[in-house]
Length: 296
Image (tube, rainbow, N blue to C red):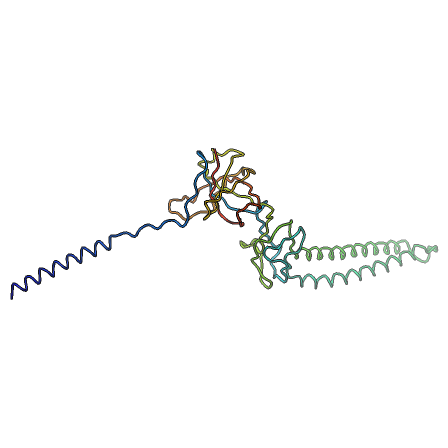
């Protein structure tokens, strides 16, 4: 009986050791590394400078602003609408100014009537030939009254023009011909000047421009007119031929941080602008990112 128990204990221990070994092997096994969803772009040049780029509209994007904090009462455009220079885009609440304009125009009518009455009275007094009918002092007083009435008329007219100018500012118009890229507001919402989120974003899509950020450490290798090729994120098989436009003469802090733990937040970049025709076979959207290679 004791021999059977000994054998049973031995086999049980052996089974436990085998199970523990299999468990350790199972836990230590690593899953195969999945393949990337798309292959990385291939550098087409033997010697090049790499850069990160972003697609912009021609002449950069226009983040539309408002002159005063007000309620939006009218929105006249939608995304993809093409607008001309001076076309109304937004209407801000103008009821208060319109109410003030009614009273100011009424004061203009009163001032005009007063000025006309005093001018006619002075004209009649000046044609009086009998010096005993009116004194010189009274005549000068009448002339002064007319000057005051004329000045008051000019002031009331100027107030009307000022209010009309302020009313025209409440109609936000397109600064130039462009396409509406984004609408971030709706009628009934309140907008303020200097808001981080622009009510409307416009851009000329006649052609696209690419803004390339080059690390300041390799900025000395950049020359004007460098040939460049770009690859859209996720589309590494269709290189985009780019035309050199200019080098921005001011190095700025890098803003498109990736969040990597090895990335320095004090990195500064040199920006180089390239041009990509809108008629290219590849569909481009403003805001897309690219990998760029600049031939040395």
